[in-house]
Length: 239
Image (cartoon, rainbow, N blue to C red; front, side, top):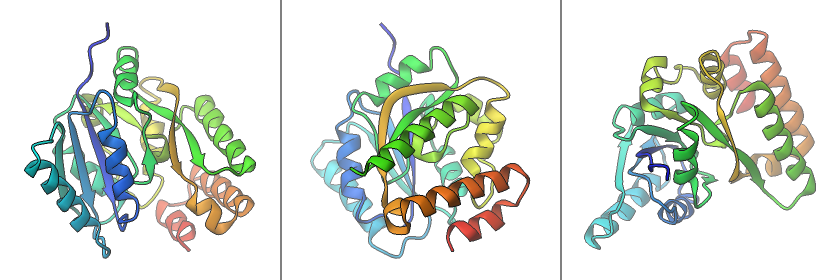
């Protein structure tokens, strides 16, 4: 029987008040549970930080804290926020999770089994939409990731704490920090590509249009591959 790894989940947060209740419910449903969850707020101006603190306080008062929940603040930027959370992590494995992404119920067990064969990995992803085209997009993302050994943050990247420290954490850049880290990691070892899926928000695709978003994503990834700066790509992504 595979021993259950101690996992610290690190979640960068900016203005995720609407997503947080669903995120908490998802994490509390995991079987087995993670050892620790660290939420890192990057300067929310909605009620995100208040919601997190209220939730943790309710757990403490109700003596229901089976997980070490923590909330901290840092400068904005996913790389900065995730590195700040990783610095406080106590688990053997770090799982980086977006606030709008939901884990499968057996995520911790799946990671434990994967980490007996690899030092890092990611899940398959499914965009949360009934649109057939977005199911196709999800499949293409997973196929591309298996082919290139590059994962994106939406795929819930996990990595041993020791290897993450060896890599120096996420590169401090405005965007594509996940792609850059994976480029470095795959030079050391292949990732574990888990077939069980995380469910992630399709809000950007729905807001800006499926085809428009597909074209933009491929343009940005191609430009990053050919050396365009992360700052330039970040400005275009959030335009």
